[in-house]
Length: 397
Image 1 (tube, rainbow, N blue to C red):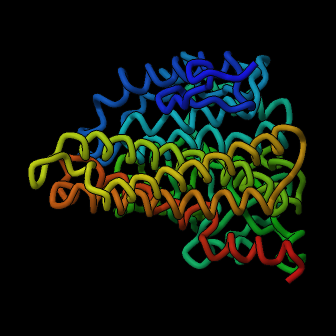
Image 2: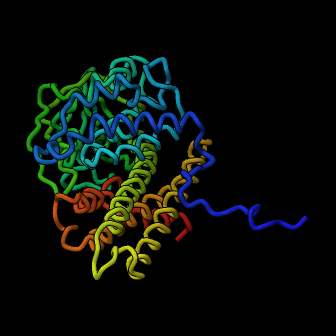
Image 3: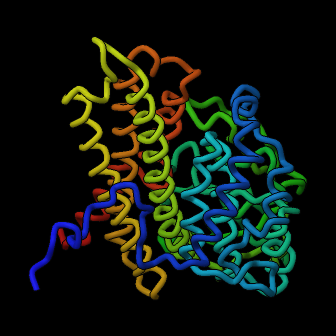
């Protein structure tokens, strides 16, 4: 029997996006996080941007709701979910309209605590991971130094064995949560002659004698996140502060960076989508020459280009996340997703400013903030250039 015009499936451009990695449980989680972010966090965004600091109550409140341990085991207070739950959190946080807030939370949930979960002793998990999941302790991670950023192997902060203790000397910079954190996952060099086998991670309480929070750094964007310059002067910690294996810190932190990059890529896609949606609404309301500016072909094509790139980045992130969740270690594809998503996020934000015209340059419309906040993603967790090197070398070049 021939199909009739009425029976042929029509395109439904207004339908919600579905992807096979997400279940109804993820959808409910998305609704819950989105509602919380919109109702309890977004109303404070403007003030936090002005004050350049979001308030610490966010952590215990998110801990109370179960949002700080979505993929961690229930025995430590987590929700026992999968990696996709972390993606949902990363995708919903941009609704707070405060990039610095999203960054501070992401460092806590997806950068500093994963190494404790994977490599920590039971005592360390009880003393650090569990209170972090509850929001009772705030975490930070110390990798970057004044002379070592993307070149992690160039780290100079030293930890020297002294009896049953270790003595740490050095400095770290660009440390998110550095001024508010209760402890730091610190990357140190314990054997300068052992190459990549000479690094060790330590859990260092920030109130330990010799830990100095030197300076709160001023930034282009991410204003609401505190970013610190830290010094460590004869900081003495017990051997129990070692996280993971002595001499294997480089490999531990390289594993952590992969999850961080993929979560960052998801956040970039979400940020780009937020900016796109905001600008699409503006293009339908703003008139020029007697009609909405979105009706002009030049603007319509801009939206088409942006939408295509956002969707391409989204599918890269989702497919790579599926491989990561299923036990693979797709470093090449994670690097590709991080590179592409961070680039298109900045590109989309820039185009959205252009579509807004003069209004886009004004703070009240919010798109300039998206550009400033997104720009960090092409630098943090591995620069574009480092991602290109990782991808190129993966092909034997």
